[in-house]
Image 1 (cartoon, one colour):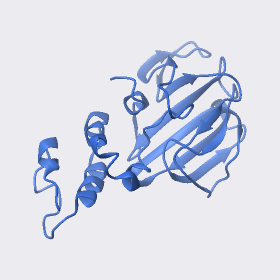
Image 2: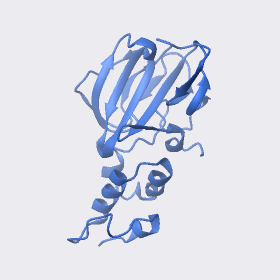
Image 3: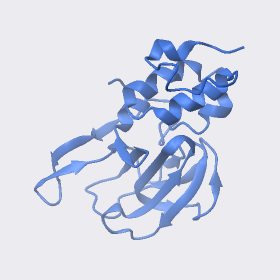
Image 4: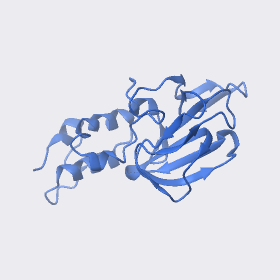
Length: 193
């Protein structure tokens, strides 16, 4: 059965291949691939329970505790006063506060494309690549327990929260990229717009 839900989200038949009968899961995957804004991507989450095989690659859990909303000390911003450098800089992620050595979880299934100690201002860090053009980054870890090239599952522990690199206290700096562009992780963490 094909669900005509994409029209509800503003996609025309020209955007999605209509040459053959397309399943609902294929349409959801096409929608995720074509979407680039958090507001467009959030619309598709109503199908998460019905299509878990698709959404395991969708980064929408709190990387500090997948079952609760995170506490943020600093949000996503095109300009903020950098706490160490004292000038205005983009903050391309969110800072999630927690105690030292709190487990850090992969927010979606994917592949480790970078796991690096002493990665400059990022400190000990991990970067994951996921389906649908997503990448996630996890900075300031005390320790990471995955290696480059390894496959990880959504909700798997990848490291432990720390205060390494350019950091003023224990927190996780968390970033999401979609097709190479930074998007606000707060929109995926179920803590409002």
